[in-house]
Length: 110
Length: 114
View 1 (cartoon, rainbow over the protein chains, first blue to last red):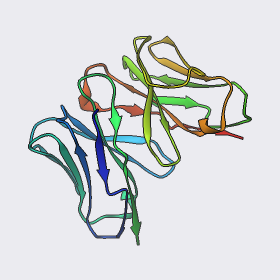
View 2: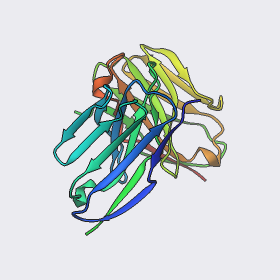
View 3: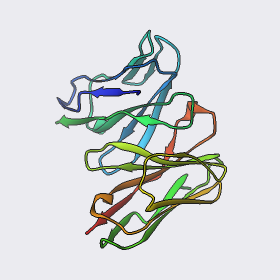
């Protein structure tokens, strides 16, 4: 079956440091989405990647989709306290079912 | 205007009771979902409806019964609640076949079974 591992599970960084979370799939993905969930909040859609090798940026956030479309990463430059939360990758295989990765919980040390 | 709204936000109830959670979206989306998030933050899909038709039914106990009176509403009824049902339940919606905008989630219902 399809498996997607997200690492690390937890990450504690000093404010101003960079942060990266990775999603790795055992099978080729048609696309990948990234979501952010603040503590006590709900998942919020950040971006979707579709093309092999695609790179997209949103201010301090950089999203990449691997050449083989089996892995993806989210990188945050110079973290701020507002970046606290859990970051999820999510994917589907051409149907309506969006499956979420296990999430990376980011905490910031001021 | 809240795009996807769920009620109630919190629900505390005793084992064995029956409860319902309501969800409404005003985005004109065709597809609605129920997800369950456990204490470890794992998000798992439970059900999906497209234009009032059930299209995804994961291996969920049949104590859980979704109902979609129209494409803007998807309710979740749970019979004979058990301790293991305690979790946060999220409703979500998406435009059918248009993946670019992702799913829009409601603010969640925190269910505690005591």
